[in-house]
Image (tube, rainbow, N blue to C red; front, top):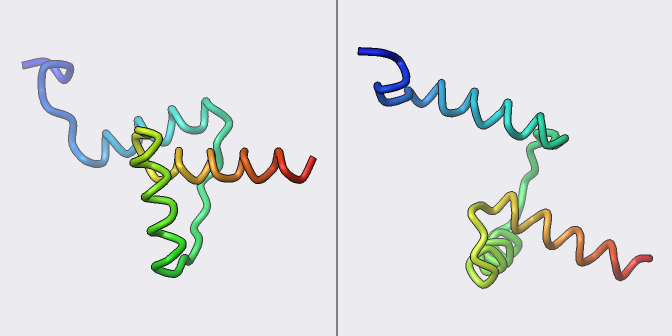
Length: 69
């Protein structure tokens, strides 16, 4: 059975995700958030039908950035 027809392992999925994110020019960082901040990010994700909290955080930063300009 070829690798393409087999299920990818978690490590392979993570590696693929990292490669895709790097190709998009994204950087991996780690931040500590309180429950209220995390709840806000999750609410933004759900209300905008986003796939991840990363996308919600990016949207939140883009909107805040526009207010600063």
